[in-house]
Length: 192
Image (cartoon, rainbow, N blue to C red; front, side):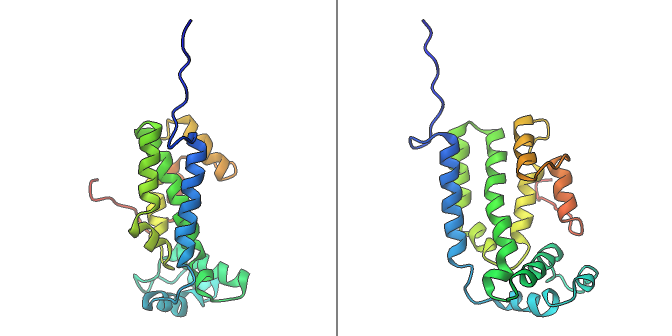
C-alpha cells in the first residue's frame, strides 16, 4: 500500500487559501493610506497632465513626471468618479500594486516550491517600498507589475492559463502584454 502525498500547506492553509489571505492583507495595507493628501509630484501630475483632455494627454511627453499610462488611467478614473480625491487619482496605482503581488506569486511559483513562493509573496506584499509605490499616483507600481510579468516563463502553461483567465482571454505572452500596456517606457533591469 502506497501512501499518498498530501498537498503542501502554508501555515495550515492550502496554497490557494494562503494566496487569497496574502492578497487580502496586500489590499488592506495599500488602501489604508490611499486617501491621504497628495504629494507635490502627484499634485504636479494632476494639474499638468491628468486634467488635460485625453487626446492631448496621449501626446504630451514634456516631463519625466508624466508616467503616461498612469496619467491616462488617472484621467479616466477622475472622469468616472467625477472627483479628484486622492484615492480616485491613485486608483490605477492601487490596482497595479495589488496585481503586482499576484504577478510576483506567479513568478515565485515557477522558481520555488509552494511554501517558499508564498513566503516570498508575503514578504513582497508587506514590503514598505511596494506599499509606498502603490499609494502614490505615479507609474511605479505598473513598472513593478510589468517587470515581474515579463519574467514569467511563457512555456509554463498553468501560469499562462491563469493570466488568460485574469485578462479575459488575452492570447499573447506576459512580455507582449506588458509591452502593450506601457509601450512608451522600456523596462530595464540592472542585471540585464
